[in-house]
Amino acid sequence: STLTLSRTSASPTPRPKVHENGVACKDPAAVVAEDFLFGGLDKPGGKTSKRFGFTANQVQIPGLNTLGESHVHLDVVPGGVFPVHYHPRAAETALVLEGSVYFGFVSSYPDNKLYAKVLRKGDVFAVPQGLVHFLYNNGTAPATLYASLSSQNPGLVLLGNSLFAGALPDDLVAKTLLTDAHTVQTIKANFRRS
Ligand SMILES: *[C@@H]1O[C@H](CO)[C@@H](O)[C@H](O)[C@H]1NC(C)=O
Image: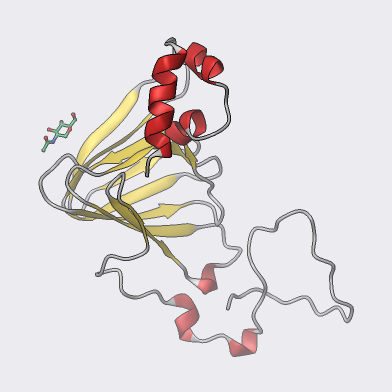
């Protein structure tokens, strides 16, 4: 259900081991207006994180295949966060559609400078590619955002998960965080609990 010029070779291409940025092609003659449309963003939907209090809905627009962008619709309950993370392959701009959120990013080492704002309805904030950022609905009303990313495959690294949901040894994580292994085990247990 996507759109690019299709390969016309007679023999089928073997499936490559390397992943392509984009999916299979659609016959241009079969393209319709719906390939460029995504409706229903006035309603919440998509992947819900009860633990963190948000719902993320990938905005799938087939007509953008290979064009190097992607879009997400986010609903965040009061008290909810999109936890501290970064996108290795994309800059991001986020537009607040409803409510208000504390949103920002941290510059790279050694400055680690915080650039953050309380955003209100109608505000847009930008995050340069690869920088650690967050979204925190510390207000009292639900918030809705529309985020655009400058890659079709932006990638997502959640710092908490990298450190506490993966296989890094407890003592290594403890040394990284200047703490003790017991503290690391406590946090790891929180990550295991769903
Ligand atoms: C949200 O947090 C920011 C940063 O700490 C603060 O400036 C703002 O007042 C907070 N908003 C509310 C509603 O407490």
